[in-house]
Image (cartoon, rainbow, N blue to C red; front, side, top):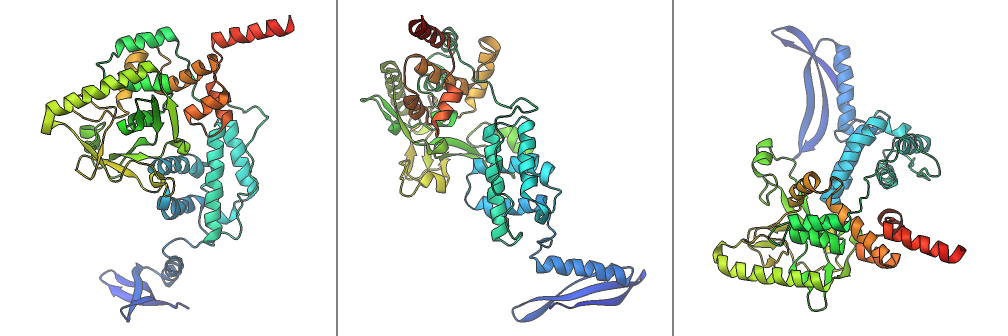
Length: 431
């Protein structure tokens, strides 16, 4: 039991009061925590009791008094940052700061109930958040409340049997990015603008003809491409780690480069661990063969001035160790044993980062198609496959969707040719 002592002290301004209590010994020597300057005994005793309570709870507000906002900060620091990827941490932080704290932060943690959390999910649904966002919110609430229970902040978790609303119309239309289909004549204009000599040509081709995600495109290496059998293996994606301590001057001076302050590019597993093999056309195989030969000639020409990149570990994925999920595989300019052979590089070997597509997208939107973004190439690719008779299962495997419903509901756009095929079927069956 810690005893609180109050005593009178004297200073140049007259008598003041001090609280003092004994804390843990260090190296066998007794230690004390104290603070002086209080005008009355009552003030000193009140402050001393609060200091004792904070000390007994490891520097935090007493667990039975903690707010939801303060608890989420603790959960993020002590649990989430232990094993989550940088992109997941960034997402969690945004949700905590922009959604959870404004809506739930003022509650005491111990006063949260299932009814409160269920009402929160319904409110977010009515506010227009997508089903995917609601699933993420529910998952975060479940994880955080389990952590709170395991660490004795609460006796039992309130995040039980939470339901995602459905079969009702939200008050605000669901927030979801439109899925644009890029017509053939528009794609032709895009490739006329970004020809073989452009750094955006191959990334655009890979998005259009293979349906790759942006990070998968720029994480592609020559070891992933079998030009003989015309197959691309999706083994990783590339992502950006942004150091939170970068100054505004670092951002202005270096943003968009591989030497951007203390940030860096790194490899991680494809989204949803969607490792897969993708068949490519003879035309794309020929384009990639020409590009590979061009890079070999350029490397010999530039010699020691050619830019090389290295990784911390081999790029071969090992399911046994799940290496891309456990540790970020950083992309370096300093030499290691693991040289990276990027597909998307400039003539002198410099890495073409995903941010290159921001510039290309601005040009396309301004001069060719206002509805364009890189992900629309993925939508377009899926629609063309569906239009040509490919099965939904094949499209799902090719795009790397975790669920067939995603392929069916989101990517299979009803193009004019699909409508015409449907009309022919209706006439044949019902006429």
